[in-house]
Length: 255
Image 1 (spheres, rainbow, N blue to C red):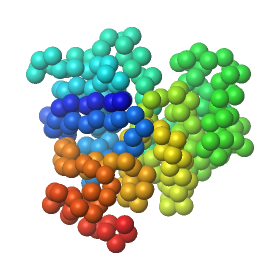
Image 2: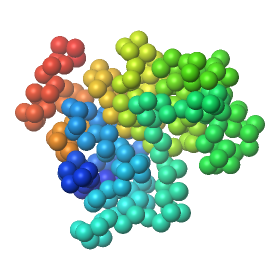
Image 3: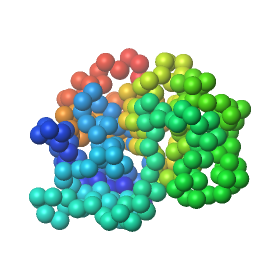
């Protein structure tokens, strides 16, 4: 089943087009790693797919329901506010820099969206939050505040918070970029666990070993286009594009 369909997506900033007609599909249970050099449009793609940026053209659908369509070549048309709220429930996003509320403790950070968006009663929300904190290995930190946690711990809280709303698909935008190598391992372990549970995920990452071991498919972007996509083995061992071969050549000894 197709959870996400993106067709001919275009996005510009100040006249500079950073996405040049991106098309991508993600199926239920699939883990897709999006890789490429800095400035290739990876994060912009995620921001457009999660309503943090408005697109200049193209179409995005979740479970076949249109979030934005292109009825003419002049202007994309977004769904109405009610439909967008419903579509928003299908996805979650984990940011690079955690984005936790510093004045809320861990438990409050995880329950906030459940109580405000889904109107889940406090006892039920806290019970679910504790289950998620156990999942990410932080059950003993529920009363701690973000400033008392390591970067890896904060990112694990961010993952629990994103999971609290039970999204169909979870997006990660460079979830380990702000962490040192030891803390990076904490996050990759959690994401591997989600992959084992068949959580549908799209992960922008520079972690090639992780992409190879956890992703069902790798998408290589450069210059605002998808240069090539395929299974990890296909792209890392037998890429079709010369640019893909060049990009991966520096990682061959590690892979």
